[in-house]
Image (cartoon, rainbow over all chains, first blue to last red; front, side, top):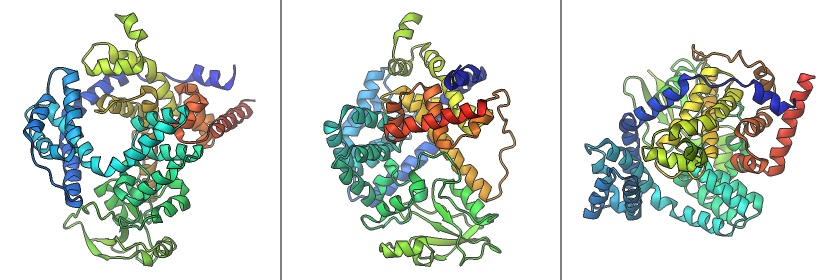
Amino acid sequence: MNVEERLKATAPAPPPRLKAAILAAAKRRRPGALVPLAASFLLSAVLLSWILPWRSAALPGAAQDVERLGDPDLETRERAARDLLELGPAARDALREALKHDNPEIRARAAELLKDVALLPVSRELRGALNDFLARAPARAAKGVEALAAADRTSVLKALKILEEEGSPRAGTLRRILTRDVLEGIRYGLLPLESVVAADAPAGALEVWVNESPNHFSPSLNPESDVDYFAEGDEAGELLYRSCGVGRQAVQDLPEFPAKPGGCVVVVWLDLLPFPRRPGRYEILHHSDFRRMKPSGEWMRSKGCQSNTIAITVR
Amino acid sequence: MLAALDASTDEELLLRHRGGEAGTFDRLYERHAAGLYAFALGLTHERNAAEDVVQDAFVRLLASSSGVALVRPFLYAAARNRVRDEGRRRSVRRRARVPAPADARPAEDWALLEDLRRLEPEPREVLLLKVFGGFTFAEISDLLGIPLSTAATRHQVAVEALERLWK
């Protein structure tokens, strides 16, 4: 018996209860996820409406499409979703309204669509580059990109890797788009939120960051090769971690800030997102500067990055 | 009816499940749950964590509002991402001296798991994808974003390491 056969023959089966648990979780997730999903998508939409110059107006057609999101017929629902996406930002108001709809199906679909619509304009250029690539790419790579694009949010990063491996001239375009536009980087996984070091990074700086920090994007499952750092035993870091959730920020312990008392940490925070202030638990000490950070600060300074770090101390 | 389901592709089954057709999820689950669970177990080494990973991957699949081009890569990519995310949290917890979850259960009923654990993460991942996901090297290459030759090499490294262990 070879290695593969032996592994297969001995692997334990999943517990019988797992299927029921999945179905129950899936059922719970639809209505249950509405509150956090709606909140996060609304937040995204609000932020993007602030960032992006255009404003939408509710359209009668959009309202009808929203109603069709709750149609018993799957095809109709899917078509309505496509129509709303076609409307793009103009559908936003109708979708926001739909978050308060009586029909949970409509609320859930609206929440998903709101996210997609909000990100549509910033991803247009990227999609163009990808489509262009897909039209020219060898079959294997194109298939891989399609599969990965459906698979997870890191798909475009992987697509980029494929492009580069294939030696496609589009790779440079795609990388430039992703590294120039932080929103795109986050959306498509080139810049996981926790590894974004400057929202206002100049073109090319994040590319260098990527190249100099291969562990960020390594397929390695080694948890040690991660980018989240806390001062060991740092209560502020742990508080921050629990408050914000990992994957929302990069936290680095710095020698120039005391870890104790006060549990001070420095947070590299993306300016596009509001920092979740929790009065009474911690306070913002002061805005800091990448130039105080070593060695990454020196590197960032050499790239002309602006400061967007804040120091926080636990009360 | 059952034969018709058996003949359906994963993607057709998913579409029909979304349309409310009974039995379609059961088929999808039967096709992928065992492999996905073993894959997750091989990466996490804990039964609870593996169950969570499998559950999360399936729930994501069922909840995905946009089209899923290929179910199998979706499931394994989702599982892999979940494991990575969990790895990050643990890394942070470790740094912050937060104890691991009290309900962690090692998978003591899979004797070979300890041997898998001794492999380097990257070769192990490729081996698990090949054995339990049934992926070709080309598919693994696409899934992990690595050259095909790298996928094949990592697989070979993992196999040889296990062979050495089992001599």
